[in-house]
Image (cartoon, rainbow, N blue to C red; front, side):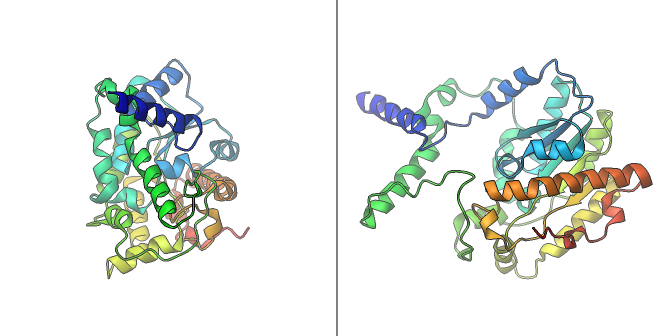
Length: 322
């Protein structure tokens, strides 16, 4: 008991010292959001859903300025498109409807298999207030994975004969060094395993919005690094990211979903903290561009009755030059 108490105290000290973030309790996150949002009027506001690529890679304030309307970011870690839809359904059941829904994804969030699909099962099966108390309140349990990562990094630095805490990478400040992903990289293998595009969720998303009396939703394909895509094309011979984007565009057109493609692979590695998360510089660079692309797509829809997917056959070619 004394050892457990000491370990719990150490984890809390790590949190207070900002070496590791507080545990992210999904149940606590959802309930705190509902408490903050219930009773609010969202008739002129956009809801922004997605996972960490939204949470860490987009400045909602910049997007709101481009859209000329409030934008509420509602990210949920590791949510696939199906997972974000499950959460959207829950929010729509509990809150006043927004002006419009925008969902942000990468190629990995549209895989029927792999790591995103596995972790999104908790969203599909979610029942409020069913998370065990211990996971909510005991930091050693709730933050176990981050503690193991912290101690592993510390041990590796000691084995290299260098006492340092430099291995702790602050989200938003790290910079991807552009090195190729190893063929046996476990995390990327799990993300991309058995890739099968989840295009059926596109039409399901449109039906969900229509049933809620909302206009067609917006689907945004977020930027990733060129190496993120090179690995996938090397890992699965014959698979093409460009073909995937074209299939995604066709699925959005067929379903009446507004598609905004900002997903061209970028070689600007200084804008990323790893192969697919924008860092603070990338967020500052890309957020206004993403907001402009969304606003342009909605203007096209209003003025011509067509989505950007129909009007702009190759938006990825309009790459940011700054």
